[in-house]
Length: 159
Image 1: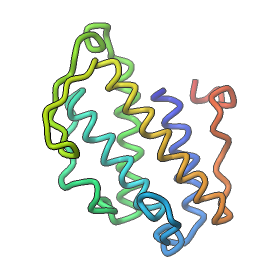
Image 2: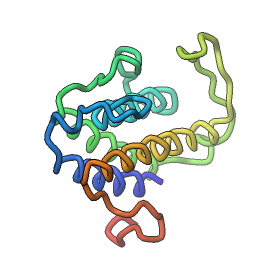
Image 3: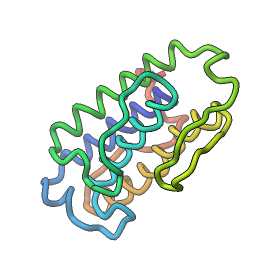
């Protein structure tokens, strides 16, 4: 999933690069309004979840302050760096990292939470896929052309 994630992010960000900054920030009626804000939210959530699962630093500020990463160039650089960190992390995972429960405080629900670590790891990638689907739809409607999203079509370079 880390390799799939990188492939899809490169596709989405590449397609978004074909738009103007104003077009990336245009309110398109999605949950986080714009392409830029949705991509910022995805990175924010990645950093938050990985601060719980690994040694990443938690992002500052709530996700609703969108876009948390306001500069497009900075957002792209942070996304690429996070994708590399996902690849490095996934290459080092052991069963002991997957087993057991994860406890954390949910700022959204304002309470402590406990879930199986494996479920939390799936959540990271499922969350990305969910919101990238929204971005894919917004990009397509804006005339940009992201790549196919189906896993069997992932290029060999990402396998």
